[in-house]
Length: 533
Image 1 (cartoon, helix red, strand yellow):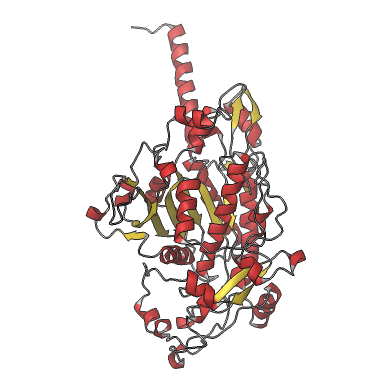
Image 2 (tube, rainbow, N blue to C red):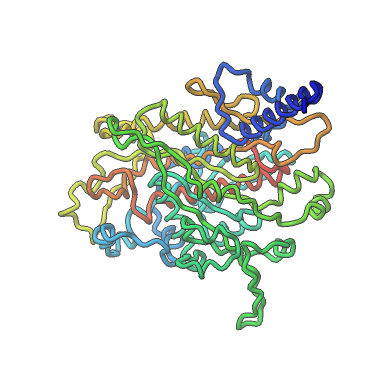
């Protein structure tokens, strides 16, 4: 039977519409790598949304503190600090046999009651406020005073405060609603993860050694890469809002003092080593990739803490329902780095595009993503003769005074010793520039003939939705403070890149805590879901 021409035409139109819709949907889910000669992002979005009239961008954080933390400072030796904030709660991650047989042989003495690399405290100062003392730094000389726009007023000094289990748990669980944590990157990223676990200690960190011990019902706890969970007490105020317990252990019990204990939030910690680049300039290239397990971990959407109706009522109708829904979703805290072994600018930029593309693909605008800057090694680090070194006494090297001294030392020793460590400031500036462009919805990132950006346009009168808000990446800039730490390296078999723990990586987590604390104040003060640093 012959199909009438009119029906044929209608069928072809319908197939064409379905194909175009499928293509546009898949393109938005993928990395959105588009040739640079294509129309700008606004034109592309207009083609997909003809009625779009305005663009929604994440508001700027407008916080000097977020830009200055970890900069303009120096290291001071403080044995009281390590006594109070060191690994005093039971190590979760134990050192390997090689470290135990060398650095682990340290014996306390009157002039070094703790391992030397753990005795240094960072004192951050603004250049124009050199008169601020170390004691003022420890006591928080000036505190943050946020106005209605989330800006910090009269803040002249930005100390990096220690991450304590109690304060970090309160910040993550009760203020930022974080319910997933991930470390994804190179071996130094794994060192930061190990430091994170040891700073909490065994009383807060649970080792998930078997499937039966992974008591929370969330499938995240059964993943091979989730070997630890952070167990944080939940405040009674936040506990009363909970309707979902997929990551909470209900332990309303009575202790020996007849006082009621509250629920403990179990936060899965995902850790996976992955890095790109080349070990040496002429080595084969290693592609930086994302595992299916990591993508799954990021994309699992936990249940909201409160219902949409309760969220709207709680905020007194000051914001739209969808904004409230996003605000009260559980968040992920993710720390990235793509590796310390790059010698080719183009390859570095390509892998940064992959990283930013993953965030676009996941599409969770309220998640807290951090890129940790690359840190260089120190050529001829101590001890230079590990076989004859007195490990019981331990190393006694002091950090560089400032970045000028670090640069001069690098030049005198012939650069990065074949590792191109002298290029790390360039890699970091490339990363910061690409992240800045990615966070700016109007621009997007263009590198090596490819463009990637976020289309976040709305039709006139359309209510905000999670998919219409942009993704934001923050920068955990540890370069300045770590470049000064020529001490505390592994030094075994000539390893002058990695550090021993406890040591400098602990301060990456102290900086992370200080940044999150400032960010939380900005978000609460401005009523934001996230903001552009």
